[in-house]
Image (cartoon, rainbow, N blue to C red; front, top):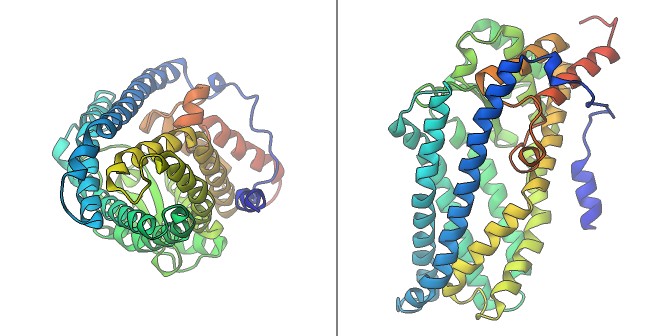
Length: 389
């Protein structure tokens, strides 16, 4: 049943396409290929050292924190909340230098200003929601383990999925708070046309001002059902991209809406959470199980390791959905030339590697490579040659 469900969730509307065999040197200059490679070497180092530092901090917490937790003298739930806060604050402070170093690295390569305060302000809303979700999950896990010491993970899994679905639903409104209406009347008309082509009429498309902390371009879809919103970063509208290229981005995000990718992501979480919680249950059983709040550091370490090991699978699923959104954007805009120009521009505006190394592709790339996206546009054009735009 798990395999069948995974197969159904992984299915997309993209036809079988041959996306390899095109040399990046035919589309990108040697200078930009070298520049993106230098930038990503730094990104790799920061990601690797940050990951090692976080895992090392968790190992130390597993070693040193349990005696303090057992000595708190509070109830099981209250103790678990305090322990969870200590763990999250520790991990946040450990990751902070690497986040600031990443911000400086982007600034060094001309991808945005080095404004640490603006960057921190941009993190607060996300951090608050994450802390609330983690605290709620901790309380549930410890509470369920106290009631069902051996089978708590069977009861906790559907509850965790329900919480994830609720947060994903509410996030549609949270992520769009503070955004603005799309100002350009031509782009607003394009949104109406593209929504009709995608079959998702009435989806709000908003603009978020991120220019205080980055010059990179991005857009995202959040929420599902009535909370669905598409948000464009205002850097996409600063004149570096043509109207046709912006339309491709809008159509891409509307393609996510049309394909219900956020709902499918919740489906994936339902498949992943059960075996993950079982692993946590096995890992903590000899120490008294999850009913003992002192085992929270070990549980979070196990979760971090499982997440790291399964990251290539998560990225592979994400790349499939991003490829489907690209294909739907091509069908909606019928402008493969604009799509090619857009993806070529990402090498300049975000220093994305046209053809990243394998390890980067597996662990850090949750989108198809620029070459894969460009070749997809070419394959679409070949299939639709001679048809009216």
